[in-house]
Amino acid sequence: EELVKLASAKFGSVKAGTPPPVAEKPYFCGAELVYRNDEMGPLAYISVGFEAVPWKSGDAVTFMVMQHIIGNYKRNVGVVPGSISGNRTINAVANKMGVGCAEEFETFTKFYKDTGVFGFYIVCDEVAVEHAVGELMFGINLLSFSITDEEVERAKRELKAALFSAPTSAEVACAEIGSQVLAYGRGLPPAEMMLRIEAIDSEEVKRCAWKYLNDAEVSCTALGPLHGLQQYYALRQMTVMHRY
Image (cartoon, rainbow, N blue to C red; front, side):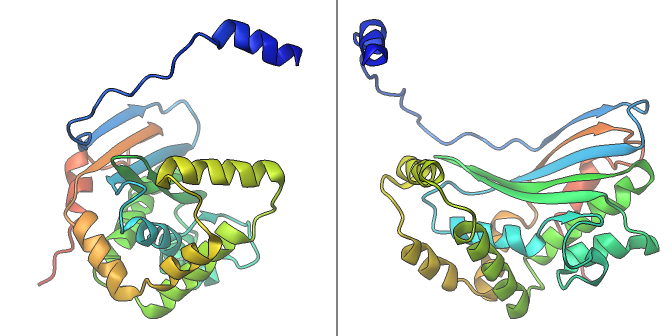
């Protein structure tokens, strides 16, 4: 009660204001921010992002599925070794040059009110930077052209497990409901999310990836020994698949 009285005394006169109106969504500017430091050690840290969609977009759940199609990887961690993984991107990264080209990578999707970000973060040896970034960019490029129903079903199972199999508590449940209210204006029942996930197939993934990721602007940031990192122009070219 004392805490409530103090809060009322200090903040009781503060009135809720309306946010300033936004005429249009923020512009996604393709660019790079690279800090090369060869004295940091043998590992390089790189992140590449594409413009995605906002929370309320009809393609938001498809982006969540695409995140799990690319997946996450950490060397020598997990039940199934990356070298025999059924995930094409993880398998390619773990078997590159016979020894693998990355210590770990993580695919991420961030949704906001007006826009979003889809991309990956990767940690790799300085001599494997080009290979590691190339494999991840190639995996994302394949989303527009060569995705099988098996890969989509696997990603959907992993997404459901991530959403509904995590340890729950009152705190976690309240945080989840709060984020849903901020994003959608209401709580999202698990059954509704399951139906949204089940409605996605390989053709839907290809359509969404072609629309947002194929021949699209990218933003890159990197830190560490980056003598193997290609220039932004080359990264931008990797978003397109050239076939003859």
